[in-house]
Image (cartoon, helix red, strand yellow):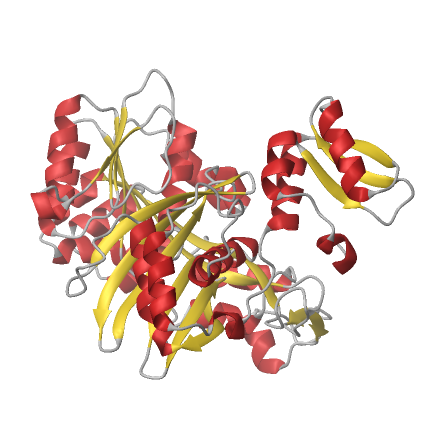
Length: 498
């Protein structure tokens, strides 16, 4: 939308309630977007008065209308100078204004309110996963994590920090007087038709409380296993193992590698009215219709182990445990699998084979693991090259060796460049790299006999892709760069993958 059009617009409340937006006021007649069916004649008369010219109404599907509404009314930029007000004024504004029901429907232009609303709107707009509010001695830094990498979007005077943090705590229903202990809360917001959950975590630090807000955009969530971009061969093997009536299926990888999303995709695939599916999570990120979801609460003794014990008494067919963190949870999960349940969970290891070693270290008996583990999926997320600016590159000898290319191969790979579309990073969005270790009789014997990781990996991935192999396939397809794959999938000298 042009600058002139942006200055002439309907109020957000009117546009949302009446289902009308200004698409192009420079055209003759002016083009008006209408949500769904017929528009209210009186509302059209009001639009005609505001525009001051003849109008032409274009019908828009509800989803397209909501998306355009969000684009028009969301905050597009943040100005640090606008928030350089007195601390007393900011504090009174932060504590005195009620939480808005809709970020964009705020008539009050209080600086702190507009700052918070603007930051969250900006985060949703550029698909950031986290907002970091970090107070220091001389400034307040606000950073967004986009595609797994933090970037600073704003640096404000340090005196703004107490007011801003207090306002966030009010929105998340936290104790604003308690600044000595960490607190966790949640904010549910509407942003131009989008439903956005914001998970808030505060942490006392030297120069004030740090705040991290995790953005959970339900409209952007891909809870379909087929939509995760898994290679067809790997996807087929995962779907096959999910058909088992019992056993343990593990997803491994570091924090932020998309493990929970993969588990949600598996649950969506398995979801059936004839089955009782129960989960224990920390926290429950997305609601799945037809699945019983329970959130742990260590403060009252509700741990993963306690929750897992409880749901096993609820006659489940399929159980999902957010994470196996200790020997007690591992022991209960194994016993659940032995008694006829399908158990899905995550575990923090660097590779698929490493999950077996980690469970052994937790005290799980090898003979029990060999009879219960059904499959292990390891995954990472690599940044996708921006399609607008990626530049072709002829691989050098070292890159050819990494990609297993013949010396005379004419293959072309791509490198990041940077443009306005991708924020001059060269990357836009992310894609997954995966390795899957299916458990056949030979692997079972190796687990039972306590065989080392190297021997198990050599056998499991003799004919299947490792994480690095999967990443390099994306490189050859022009979807990411070698540097990005090597950054995320750090190969060890022994060549076992990660």
